[in-house]
Image 1 (cartoon, one colour):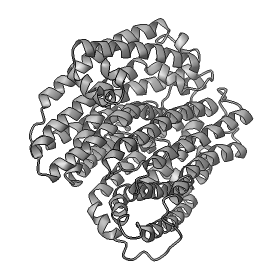
Image 2 (cartoon, rainbow, N blue to C red; image 1 turned 180 degrees about the vertical axis):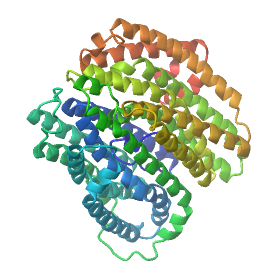
Image 3 (cartoon, helix red, strand yellow; image 1 turned 30 degrees about the horizontal axis):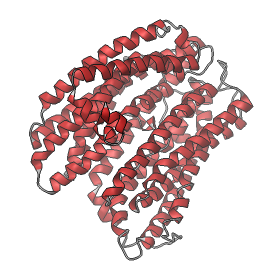
Image 4 (cartoon, one colour; image 1 turned 45 degrees about the vertical axis):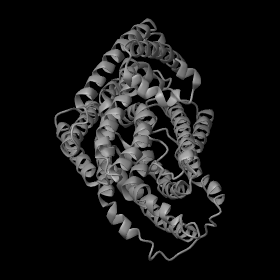
Length: 573
């Protein structure tokens, strides 16, 4: 399972459906490149932010305020935009006016509803912060409320971004929607850079909350909202180029939203339960913030809080987003066609191929995260005197989170089969059962586990929830569609796991020589951490590919096949 905050650019849209065969490759290339650049800038933005304000109490407070709008938007309307509206927009785009009237009404409705909701939520910033935090002091609640006032308008811009992006997708303009978050990250990098230039980087001061100023709040929180606003507003330029002639238009009867909403009720319910569980986990881990404030600076730096937990989610979601999500998007179309043409016998081979192909990058990434956890944590630990303690705290969570990564991708693939058959009820039940069990277990354990360790408990729970989700989905898929070659898939993961582990040993030896496990060279600075990761990770990757090639692993060919067909030099090898 992953926090909603694992992405800093807000909710992502549904996969596009294109009707032009020749345009699919270009569309996917545009989306993939936008995702890659955005993720890279997101990493840089998070690292620069921790350099600016650290990763302790104040960072937890800002993280809480900056993440709440994302989760609330997904809870209130994310499913409606990303699930309900896509098929409707594609349908109306085939009308004589290319859907101009419908789209104008829809965008007007979005502006009105999201505007009103945002005003109400902003006025309720204080109560919202109190509800979603645990044992915060009056000073922490006051600063959290102020941050939330400045961040809550993001809800409105998320709504505008989502609806305009889906309009563009429906008219075959996929690139703008995926590249708009890049503009957001560029703005936020500029804001954080300005912050450092004006106020300096975090120096390890222990009175950060008490000494915080209004000017710092306006620049940091206001700049974060500005980035989301730019992300939404840049889409109006490609929207104007569609020639739809969008203008304010009221009168929303007859748009068919109630009918389509009923069809997607199960999916919307699943999204609501998932986001409520994210808020509940977030509330629980916020208890670490209150405890840390009562400890010494060095001891407090070793306590994981909301920032550290979300950073590990940001890191581990990367291989899943790039590889599992991309491949699942492609195979989803094949699943759907097979069901539509009543070729059910093709489902099992497709599923087996997808799971085995994904094992190559995802299992390797899991081992790499475990081996490189320390230096990776150091990148996001600022340059204060407590950087090593904070980096180690992040690294500990990263190891636990990485253990469940392969099961996250397995579960995701298995769920695609149900969605391809237009069964949204089964995934909703699976996700709801796992979410409820996870939240209940977390709050029960919180009764006996000290708050200084609660983030560790939740990170471990996320991995166990991924495993449980994969197991339940596997049982239901086999029961409904028959075995998809479970033994063959398991064998692939075990073989690739051993090869990843062997390459991990090599990487660990190289990293140890660079002081990666005893606060040596790899911990001296962020630059040294990056260099150590690059050298150790490259050694791991070379050994891993050589082992796969020597063993003539069919999964390597399946994984690299699509790339090899486009890159002649890779095909020759």
